[in-house]
Length: 358
Image 1 (cartoon, one colour):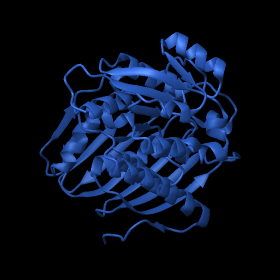
Image 2 (cartoon, one colour; image 1 turned 135 degrees about the vertical axis):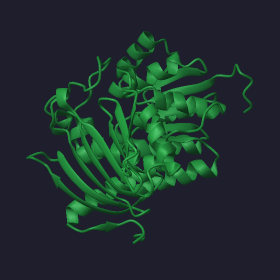
Image 3 (cartoon, helix red, strand yellow; image 1 turned 120 degrees about the vertical axis):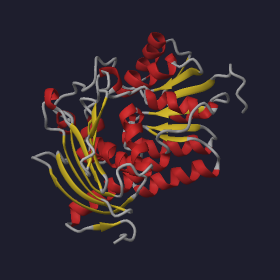
Image 4 (cartoon, one colour; image 1 turned 120 degrees about the horizontal axis):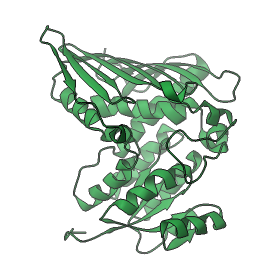
């Protein structure tokens, strides 16, 4: 559909819970070219209250009913993880553009099916990775793509975020701002609903970020988890080889104080090294030939985790105003790492996803 400068994209949100009401509803409501007309949540009374408070005209307890709305063009899926795949598949089959929260699916095969379905129907499929939208993330990706770091040899990531209380099902206090709705414990602590613990909840972010930055998909994964007495993993360590030969280490846990959460990304190339701390919004590039360093301006606190950016980018992509920052292929790459890490931790084996470049 041609954009005449006034057209608005008719949208709905499936799974209007903690994160849906905190990030996605405000994102679409504040976008001048989006028209949010419907929300879905399983509880009818909760749906009615959300509709009143956010001034949304239609409510549904069934995702299928929302998807079937004749004027619907796009949906944001922020439901519980085990519903992401069937709901996204139904929306794409209906001809809707889709943004899917992480984890995109439970398996890489499901993620691949969504990517292929979107491509076959010329639809936008967007993965929900807010860190891809920061100025630092965009600049780091550009530097790597243009060869400013040389050939990539090693990446080291330490990612912590205090979510272990959710994974343990011990408490439901959120990790971002003041919520409209409290998180539901079973969303994170029930294996049948969550898929896994830290690996699905947080490492999914890091796994997608590796491919976002480098353009390279994972080739080999070796992983060890520690559950710390929980049903699901709390401490995760991964060794990943990318298809370009770069080796990466990922260490991640939810057992950390909010005051000291970390997201350190260290990238070592043959020409230069790039150091980022995503939670504090810092980035530095240091040349290996003694040519000095470049310290990029720090991100403002509001820029560090732009939770509204993915939904707004979906609208802009549909209108042709922007390229898709986190296409479904990044969600697929993330799920390849997550699934392989789970298999490696279970079997004690190195898992090959594709032929090693070396």
